[in-house]
Image 1: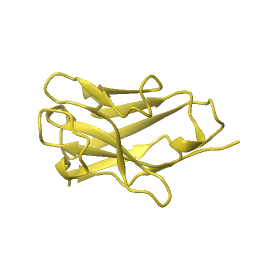
Image 2 (image 1 turned 135 degrees about the horizontal axis):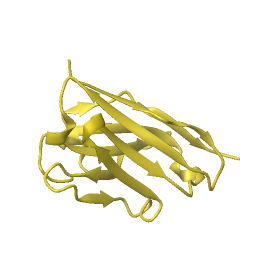
Image 3 (image 1 turned 90 degrees about the horizontal axis):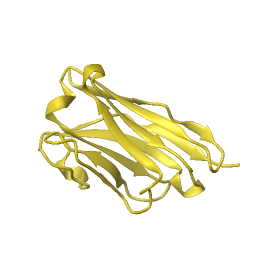
Image 4 (image 1 turned 90 degrees about the vertical axis):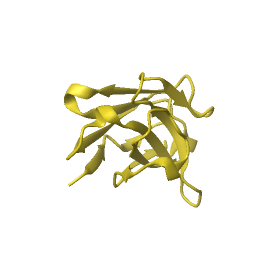
Length: 124
C-alpha cells in the first residue's frame, strides 16, 4: 500500500523553527517529485515548495523563499521541509504529496499520492 506520512508539526512562537518530515512506504520516493502544500484555515491549499525527481531542483513560493528549505534523503525514503523564521501567517495544515513527473509542480492536480497532513501553528 502506497503511503506518505508527515510528522514534525506543532506549536511554535514567531521566529521559531520546525522541521517537517514526509516518509514514504510502499514505494520509492526517488522516482517521484515531491511537493509540500499548506492549507490555512478558510483558505485553499497552496503550494509551498517542491523538489524534482530528475535533478533535485527545487522551487519555493515567494512567501517562504529564504526561510524554508526542502531536501530529500533517498536512503531514508524521506523528504524534509526545514522551516525557519516562522510567521503567524505560516499557520496551517502542511501536506506532502508525490507526483510521478520529473519536474517540480505547484499544481496539486499533478500529485498522485498525499499524506494526511500535519498541523503547524505559529503563535505567541
